[in-house]
Each structure stands twice: as C-alpha cells, then as structure tokens.
Image 1: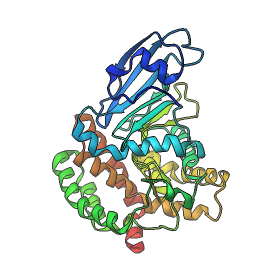
Image 2: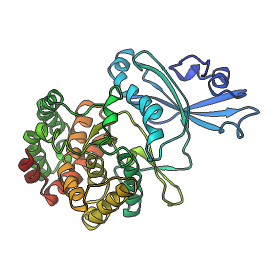
Image 3: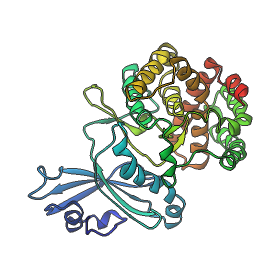
Image 4: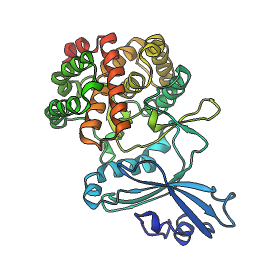
Length: 354
C-alpha cells in the first residue's frame, strides 16, 4: 500500500508525492492540462528521475476531482464508479483500458487521485467527424470484451453502486426526459432537423418502460461508449482503448453497441455496415463464453437499444456545460441516431415491447 496521501489539485502532484505514490525515485515533474475539465481535472505529468523510463513511464495522466466543492459532491458517485471499475471490475473483463499506476480516494470518492497510462501517440476519436468502418469494427470488438466475460453475471449486483434500473429510476428518467427534450430543442434551434425533432418527441413517452425492457439480458454497460472516449492507434492498427468509466451501469449490453454505431458512423456507412458490425460483436461475445444468445436476438436488441443515442445526447446537452463544439456534437449525434431509429423501426419495436 502506498503511503502517499490523497491529493486533489495539480499543485500537490509534486516529485516527493509521486515518488511515494509510485514507489520509485522521482526528482522533477512538470504538469500540463489535458481536456476541458467539465467533470474533473486531468493533467499530463512529465517525470524526471533515475527510475523514469525503466520502472515508471516518462509521462502519466492524472485524473483529479473538479475544484468546485459543490460540483464535486454532486458527481462523487460518478468518481466512485470509475474508481471501482478500475479496482474491482477491469481485471475481470477483456476490454482494453489504460493501465492504472496509482489510485486512492477517501470517503465517498469525492476526493481522489488516479494515475493512468498516457496513451500517446494514440489518437482520440472525433465524435463530430465520425469513424471509418474499420475503426468501428475495432471498437465493437473491444466492447464485446466488456460485455462478454460477465454476461448476465448475478455477482455484479453485489458491487456497491452498480445497479440495474429499477422502477423508481425509470420513472424519474421518464419524468425528466420530456423537459430535457424541450431544453435541448430550444437550445440547439436550427441545428436540429424537423424530422429529427419529431423522432425525438416520439421517444419521450416510451423511455420509462424502455429503460427496464429486455431485463432478461444484462451486463456491464459503459454508458457513454463513443468516439471521444476512445483512443485509436496512430498507424491505423486495431487495438483501441476505452476511457472514462464514470457512467458504468448494469443494463442491456446492446445499448453500448447501438449508441456507438448509431452516433459514431455516418448514416450511409452505418446502413452499409451495421449488420456485419453487429455480427462481429455477437461472434466476439460467443468467443468470450456467452451462450444461448442468437445472431437474430443480437440484432433485435441492437434495434431496440437505439433509443440510447437520443437519451444521452439530450441529457448531456440539456444539463451539461454548453460549448459551440458540444452543441454541434450533440446535434450530430441526434441526427445520426434518429436516422437509425427510423431505418430500424425502433419506435414500433419499443412500443410493442412496452
């Protein structure tokens, strides 16, 4: 166990603290901010010392809580979720994630520090630009590594904070989705096509019961498995790595699949490749030991789960920090996923299940 205390600001990530946390000799450290820091603070640490390059990498990424105490308390559950994922769950699944070099927290998780592998020169995906079919295949095969190893594993429910959607949670979702949709449409205005606004409105009365649908199949669900949360090899090789595990839950695994393909691929590319990509995900699940789940059931779950795209886009935009890129990103995600909902007959399928 490390003797280093839990620190929560970049200024506290000193050479002596890092030496204690990592158990190596560190003589100097330089920190530079990474990302926008909406849910917390992320910095890249450049290390110097006799053990750097041998016992510890020359660079690490540090994740810390947001500096705002009020916001920190509100998102402590999300912090705790990510910490538990790396500590308890990641070793039991096959999804590629950054290596953890140090993790520590106190109390409810609002105060924490997480030192992760720096994935450079990997390249972050771009949700606005979308991805190629080859990148999509890489991502869905990695996703199967999350879903397959603990498919319908009842012991997952024993992990504190990892719950399936209950009646009260679904009712709250249904209560909030309508007002959030109004905020979303009012805020994005002309960025939303009228056809997509109509599709979104048709999702609203279905979401409460949809959230609890197909409960006979459950597993670990990332919840925000999209291009901005994936790091791809710079040379185009396979082997993407998934980041940001603060929205992990137990739900229908195809939600991640539908969300990723429905929001990440250009509409034409999705139409051309989605059956092959769903088949690749399904085949990978079987390779991880899943049984009693047919190819046809996988595609039907994919169709049903496509409501995940509008849900995440609406809540992310309505209750998150607004930015110009964020507005364009959420509008693009909505347009792609609404096209998929119409193409796949998701509304009628969900209404029939409800």
